[in-house]
Image 1: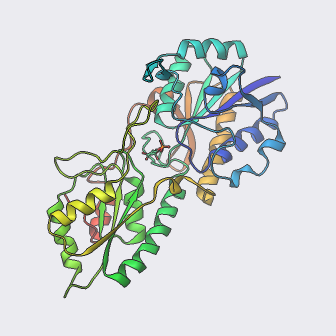
Image 2: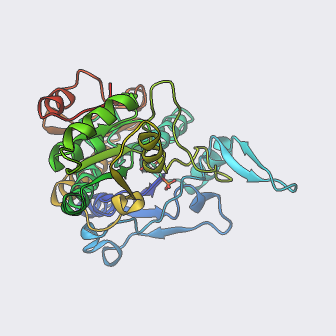
Image 3: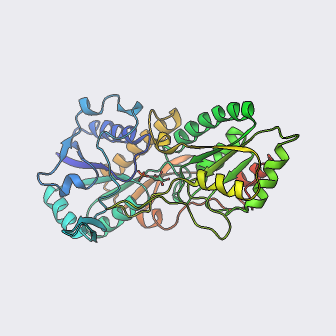
Length: 363
Ligand code: F6P
């Protein structure tokens, strides 16, 4: 029998379970493949005893409609930059990739399918270069991978954000308030941009377009006649004013990234300081955007990715990442997969259309 190992790494994302089920179902059709899963990304391999489970049909049946990942995940076990707690309470980051490669070789898997975002696919590339038969599956609600036109989880996040935004509009109108809704998007503003168009925002702030606070106050003032009006703003967590910096909360031990969050409150203060007279309320959507049932589009895309990734494994095509390009599921090399990020460009058709709809970016 041949063996494939599946793992999910980085932040979770609606659709991960549908990928796992897609891999398992496609593998079962072959009769000579068994599917295993490593618990909590590479921790399942590092841990003693190792945590590797067999993905039987009982384990994967019906999981495509569930959010999260049955294999669990973490964004604190990057084997290339692994956080090791020190006696003095500090954390030292060490390269454990050789140790991981040794363990994976001992386990003798015929294929390893690594489902994860940018960081995870960089790990896939390192492992492949060291002789591991890896296939990548892209995952992120942020949709910031350039090798694929769209990632699963993104549509679900946009739907959740839009539903929330709709709710804020009615209360904004009743109270004549400015409502600021903060969505995820560390370096890429796709969720905010899509939500702004779908929800009919007056202002959309994204990391790629630093804003001028005075222009925002002017736009809000236009919405208030005789002191009455309302205004709805969507802001990505990584948005920043011109010549300003991102709003971060304290860093976490063992995390490679600064934790973002709180830009809605910063913006609220900046607007007040710049003379905005209207009453302002802030809502931070946070991890609600990553939870719950994936929308149909994400389940479909995730299932297609699962089937395709397994077919690459069956055909012995390693060092590739599955992707969605020009309306079809295909693949790119891991090198291409990790070459550049997908950021919103100022001349993107969505930005242009948003401006046509009267949405202000503050630029
Ligand atoms: O998946 C990326 C992301 O959604 C970012 O937009 C956000 O900054 C990050 O996850 C938060 O992840 P966590 O709180 O799980 O570390």
